[in-house]
Length: 223
Image (cartoon, rainbow, N blue to C red; front, side, top):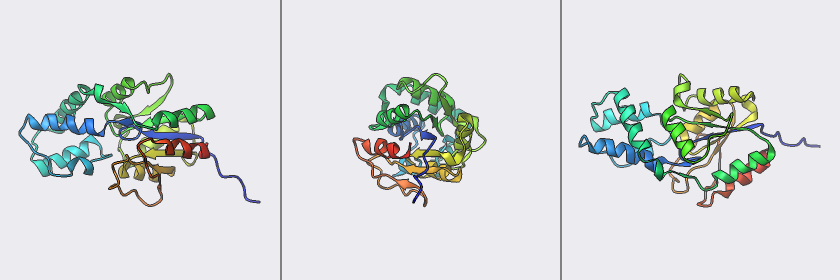
């Protein structure tokens, strides 16, 4: 007789583009900053940067757009412009349903982001996603951001769950690479309009819809 499939003991969610519909707001905040310097982004720049750390984005801006602003100044100013646009943020369709599945099953979750801590906290607070005792990991708490496994390994340790007992939900290729490198079941859940994203081998990729119910349906089978 075949044994029952192993159940997941914790789910680790990416934030931007996964739980929070915020990728366009990040781009507009960056564009606000570039407009002040009369700099122009090349076509497809925002799509290519999905899931990257702000440091990696800055490197591309220097190389491709001629930005001369130092990284610490860029981070402070870009984050400030993003926070000024917080009212634009919405939960991604399907995110609340997925969280409800975990709550009903008594399965803990963490939110793991390549965003800086001030941006992460402001975004989660804006959308009511901060819970008492909840685990969140930002880029500031680890030596290496995604695609390195550090953020997801830290989240698992904070939850007290072994990496192999965790599932990761990601909308980007760098994030999915981080989940796989951490030894976790990794679910690629791209935004519905992002059929251009190629997830790394080993990720279980969902065909995302505007309604988003497919993630909750999958999680019910895992927990």
